[in-house]
View 1 (cartoon, rainbow, N blue to C red):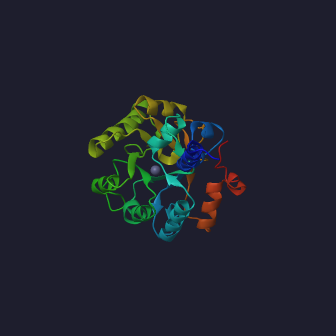
View 2: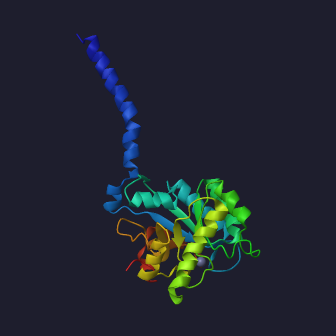
View 3: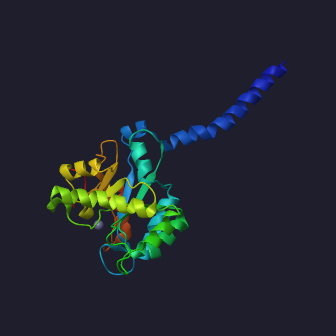
Length: 269
Ligand SMILES: [Zn+2]
């Protein structure tokens, strides 16, 4: 005869399994620092424009929509630069398929075309802007555009003050480009600005050192690759997405790091 206490224990353990199960699966589907150390990768995409002009920097609107749809329906979860930073430091468990979607320069179509599509798929993004360009003409977003997007999950960070080629500048000007863009953005937007995308993607150890000295936590390049535990915090890799003769096929190939793209010399050396 089965004693009531045994039935009680069996029922209790079944309940325990039911409640424990989601936690176990969450663990499996998240990336801990050990996972990243074991070779897990973090996808960082780099866009510039989203419009229907025939221009290599411009991803057509319907393709951008299809790309965000692909990410959302394939389990990619958007993260911020701060989350990426904390994940690489082991202070935060990242989703299993994290994606950091970035835009450079602050073009107006980021607001008019990309932003509604990002919202539609719940795919938030980070925009690296140039204070000297903001609101200057119809090509660029205004401060009001930036503030509105920040209230809805978009992160604004620095792409230097004037978008000058840093490697050609003397130290005091490099310092000014990096520091003053931070200060202007912090003043206008009211939050810390601690992440940088190098203009034209170029950087060297000297520039990276100045970026660290003036208060950035990390900086992004256009070096093609995924971010992982071996990445330099001041030379983070991104996957550039732009218009090609076969934009969607190339998008899938790029985010999957197919061999064909190594031939372009965009991979990590
Ligand atoms: Zn740029």
